[in-house]
Length: 411
Image 1 (cartoon, rainbow, N blue to C red):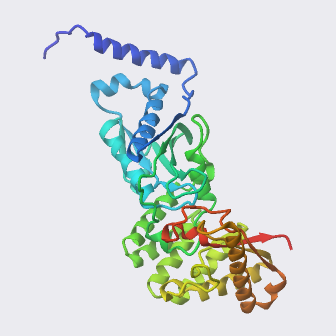
Image 2 (cartoon, one colour):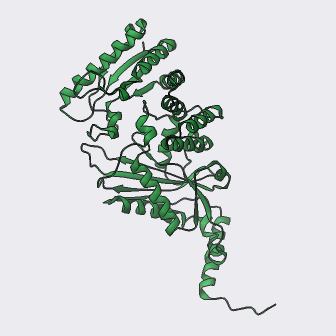
Image 3 (cartoon, rainbow, N blue to C red):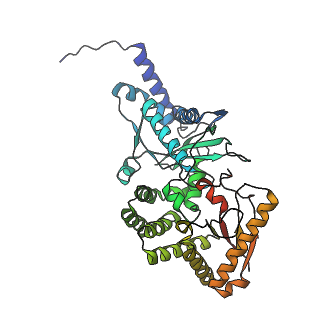
């Protein structure tokens, strides 16, 4: 065996000194300090904005003692890669997955794999949860205002799983140079606005400053988030029987009573032609929404009309929806404000009148299902003032803007 001891190089000495300094920092009791968020305010092309946000996020981690203390070992032994999962990214306004949010997620993952090998990006699957040290969450939200090409703000946060703390957060502004904002199949087919306390917690976490705790309600449901992701992937692939089984497994799991799972059971049952099961499932969706005091349903109308959209493929389940909304509202013994919404197309006065008229039609249909609702419902219209998408494209991408909401109010 060769026992000759070589003279340390300047580079190796520097690495060891850096590691030693970081270790002393930890011993000094300030190892939990965080850096500030990265904010890129210049409007960039989408791909460049994703790179800026991702690199800014990773740049913050390199200043953290937990990372600095292992620099020497990583360089010399090429070990200690940090396992990271990405919870599917969302549109912050709607809570939906769209083609654009999937592109955001994919480009961030690609950037991490190609330029930041200290992270090992693992598939968002149950078997990888025990290994995961970090969770990456991200959203994009269109800037306020009118027009279909307003820029987006991208928010990314890196959560340390052990401490449940956001250790890095970055944002960047992306131009909309023809981004595909159509919802994925699950969200396009969804009859309701699929946004509950879990989704709100996810979105809140993407905007949380480094050093602060991630949203606890969301983070406690990471296991079911993985299950929901698998079920939704099956639905998007047209594997409805498998999706139905998986959504039911979510509902049977601890903390699995979530709007995405309830809605998934309805969607898969309807696709499989199981009308009775679908109606029962939609009743649970309505009950869940009323319990949270707000339920947004995508009743689509013919343009400028109070008549439902003429295509039977669209209006086919509306009778079921109306029946269950009436029954669940009656069973809950609540008072409901039926609020109509329109897209941004057209003048404000015209849309105000149209949204009011559409809400009145829904109110009448509910009363026809259950007469006692006549004194416990009222109709109002918001026009386009509470748009979620706001593009005014009048297609599947902004269907949520033409929703009818059922808000619980004092009797």
